[in-house]
Length: 66
Length: 137
Image (tube, rainbow over all chains, first blue to last red; front, side):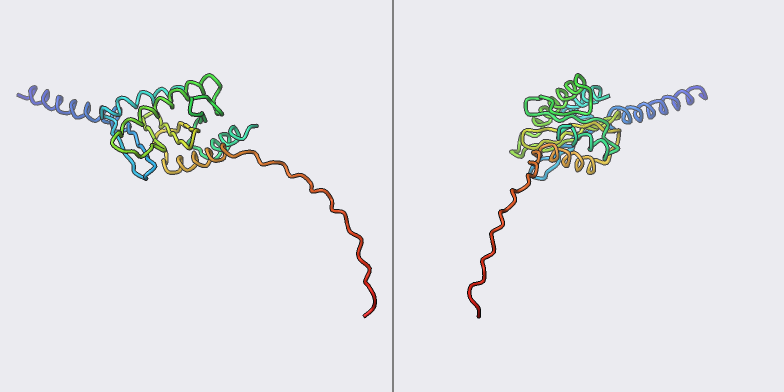
């Protein structure tokens, strides 16, 4: 019983850590803000399909400028 | 130093957040840069493609894209465009976006300014001989 509880507890902690790390490195820090001439602004979250297309070019630009 | 190069040099001096910047025209030709030529070309190509991809994100509206920020954990890419000139810059992570955009716009305007013509000395006016007072009153 004790071992099972420890395993379950470890799995929960591991899952939470994994979600946190994924969010930290792959989603939360990525964002695209677009500003238009009519004054409107569109913010695209890092995890969206639109961002998945645009972000690689940003990474390429950052790499070239390094 | 050309006006555009001077504007970019001043930009990196003024803004501690801007690491590098490239100015290029509508065709992607580099006009000025703070990077060596080869890397400036690569940066300009990537920035141009980034802009083109971002332009098609919002297809429902006629409003033109004027500036963008692409933020990643490694840093941000800022791009501003006026007329046919585009200025792209990279910054450290989590920059103050409003300040960076302001600095980029100022640099873009400075880079687009035409050199002022040198002042030439106006030719000295010939002094006319004073007319003699006529008669006595």
